[in-house]
Length: 204
Image 1 (cartoon, helix red, strand yellow):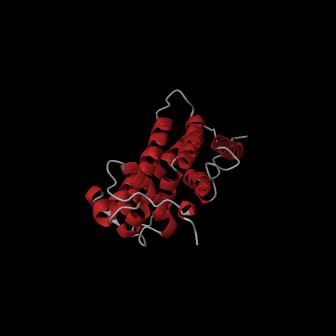
Image 2 (cartoon, helix red, strand yellow; image 1 turned 90 degrees about the vertical axis):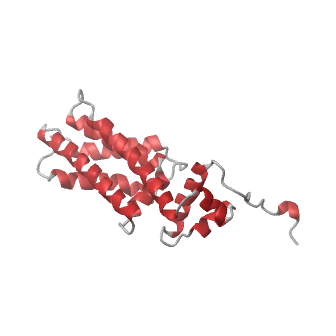
Image 3 (cartoon, helix red, strand yellow; image 1 turned 135 degrees about the vertical axis):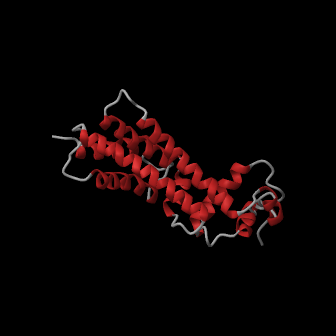
């Protein structure tokens, strides 16, 4: 028979209080683990050790949590893109390079939320809104690529929109394998991806 001392401590039961960040972190992890559609508020309450009624007292709906998670990812990515575009003293290739480097940093820093963003398919109003924002970001990034091509900073024999898709597709692929606590530091990953991408894109 297992002794009482050896048994794992149960999660605290009761209301989530003001720790909304903990609720959101656990929700994102659960959405990524078993899928948003397959996750219920009851699942989340059980994971947190709260009663379902207590969870609803502080969180209006599952989609509200999804919206918060997607906004976290999109807001952080939008900040990176806006910062790169505002660098008026930099060349277009430098602005593009900063956008790529910043996107890698953001993906790793907000990995669970960005992973969730990359998995949405437009099955709810929150997902449709997120996809619309992603399209806006994609257009802004493609514009940076086009500006770099126009300045002669990168090759012009490949359409800018295709370069943008390939470039940021490589960034997004990190969500499938990168781990912030892995053997390679986030800084080293960002530097390696940026170097590989731009050494292959620099004009002769």
